[in-house]
Image (cartoon, rainbow, N blue to C red; front, side, top):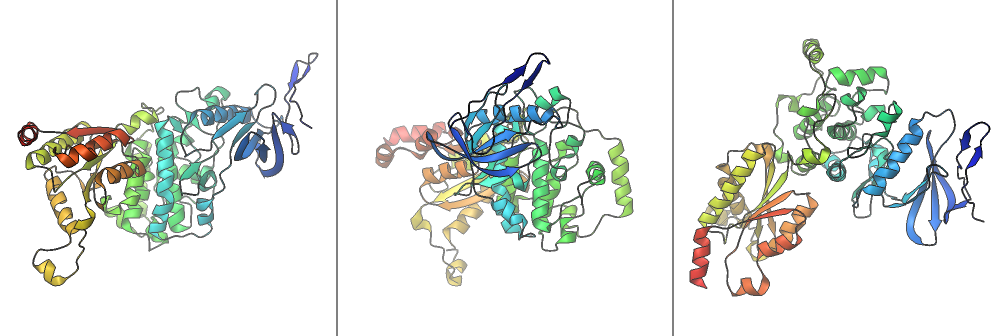
Length: 491
């Protein structure tokens, strides 16, 4: 029999009692069939509903008087955030109850716990660590695109869809920068795991999306070393992250490559301004280790000396963490965009190649933190891939090797640091490969040249037309007056 949530009001004492659902009840058509997880602040139930075929869970806040007001504030904040975010990187919002009568939240249930399982198998090889965390970075990037800062990222709050897509759950600590912060109103700290919190969170700063970058760094450290970077979760481990870097991962696990250690260190910088600006950039580095600019610290394999520790501590005394981020998360993404430069080596004229390079140069000067992927698509019949020494001696090396050399030579004139450029050679249909790469790697802008005209062009449509129609981001198509004039003469 369905229970109807009601408010029992005792006017004599001006006290209102909110209805709290329990196992076995049916509320608003949702039947609570199994208790799954119970935490200090809430209970999760598996629920069913005749109108909803999805696997679902209902989250119900505990309403005991001993719990702080933030419990209720956080639950309301979670409903607001989850009901507003879009995309596959968060559970689908189904329904919620009246906060004044019967508070509950029903959402899609995601079964996969790949990251949580991986924690039981650490330390893991660097390639496996990258494969696990790169999808998490993409999910975080999409949250930031929607101005949501999670502020409690950890393996327990990551799920995976069947296709491997990372899904972020539990938004009870999160902050949407376009909405009032419930924890500021409640004058309390949001609940979060101390082990994964950023230094600025110690100072009660909840407005900087780079706090999530720091948490990503801790997860990378944990996966690579089987240890948390600051030891046990206590007041001493919290204070340490304000003053010093953790023990080098390579001092714990000699198998950690320098590129991974450098990514970890960059994510875990004490001050947000010195971390990577976006989770998208971290994902790109994990997927393309050769882009990582190595430094002396990348190779460290022993604890810092007492002198170095003392210097760091003294330096930290004079530095302040900004008390408020000047940028919304989505605004920060525009300061470090990922630009895909699709170059047609075989068909583009020299003038068009120069014009594309000029556009890239202008973009790099306007956006200093931009990182570029240069993509060349070769036709399938170009894939000779010969390893014959005699052919190589005759300069008949595989087409993809020739393309790499030509591509790097073309880009070298831009004089950009290694960490800002990634080179990719793919085989297949140019338009499809460009669109697929842009979608998979969360590209912000595509720059490509317009192909010439001709019968095949008219019948099948140009690559640029297809990319313009289906790409998930801004597309800039470059043409030159010389090429346009040549096309008119040839038509």
